[in-house]
Amino acid sequence: MAIAGARRRAAHDEPAIVTVGDVTRVARQHYGYLFVEREEAAAALRQRYEASDCRADCMTDAFN
Image (cartoon, rainbow, N blue to C red; front, side, top):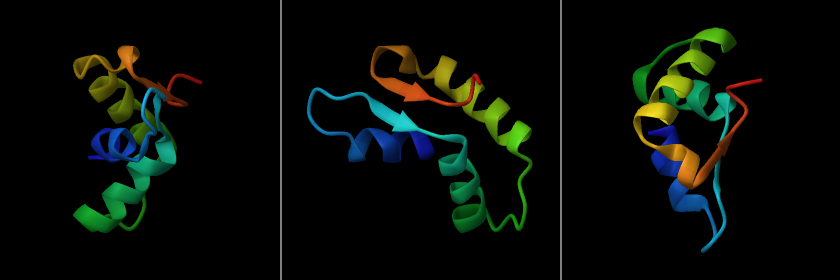
């Protein structure tokens, strides 16, 4: 959901920027989690980033 949201927000011909913060926000708002460890959110984002072939059109801070 965080990647899809970032893609929708991106301007034409600009990369989508999806952050670990975006993932934690989605986890809280859509799934009701009260707290999400940053490393867990980063790992989930890295997994989806690679599975969704995001290198072509996205940027993230999940690899830092």
